Image (cartoon, rainbow, N blue to C red):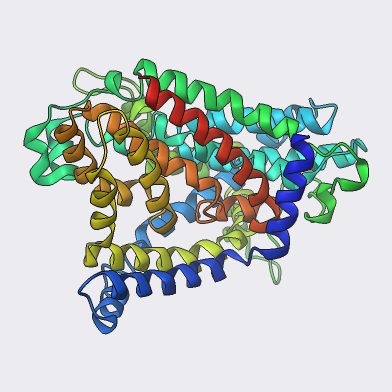
Length: 461
């Protein structure tokens, strides 16, 4: 029954959902219309904010981080040792349902540790599992595997890299993220947010719910399954080699093919990693404070070390960088949307309106739902917390709700609608070769079930 429902929903989205770039353009136009209709900001003023340096171009650094997550992760997976490990893991499932369960479980578990690891790890495992199933003539629906690889983005904000919980742990972080509201609340350690009993139940449940639902969504009839070879080019036989236009001079060739050059950079990054990951007297282990930059640097080190020579690593990067087109083109559009919403105050008015009629019991759920809606327009956990965080915490104080609970309500809403918003799926789409419309039907159904789970525990605690 659930599999048939998933197929019907997926069919609707595949027939009607446009390309993510078109969605970004339509959301931009919708945001402009809402700003003009519901605020005192005129269309010209809104467009000026949209095109300003802190508008359309505010995500340039962020875009490069996302490109590097894609490129360094892809290059690492292309190395001989990691490729062999992934093939061994991808060879474990014997059915399409087992494959969907495995990919979703690994993606969710990695997403709890770090959202970047969950995103790129889930994507690569989905791709390699799909190829393995084709090679072994096992019937499986590859778009469902790709959707399973995306579920790490549905649990990340309740994990160790969640922006909102990390931005309230110290007085300095509170001041940075909550502004004038910060003096009204005490710092909230992770034991009150990420490691609280409520979040352990919510996030632990989501980690188990996602693979279970994905396994149940597996098509029963072979005719309904689309194998991976319909979406992917054949896998290379081994590590890629860079092709030169002509014979390289002897000195450059020696430098490009010696491990010593790679080793120089690996040693430098290893020293950094030793200082970052090992807990010290005045700092916890870096595992608890991973960022996109630290993930990228770690994957760069591992990729260089495992490829051995600069030539091999650069060949893998050449192959990986082709997937960055969607990120480069669309991230600025979402930065512009965020600039219009923030500059006009529309997001704040929306959040305040939802919180105004809430009670102590209903406020966490309403905050959760409003955060899900805001995420469709501001699909950045940090950007959304900067806008909604002060309003949500102030509403919690007024209603007598624990601020830490509201912090997690915002986090849950932000991560939930990632399953409907293609912004974060762009790196996964590049790796797996599917389109957003191929996966969003399955992730949307999972989103509804996960939303019910989260709302239940927000009411219970």
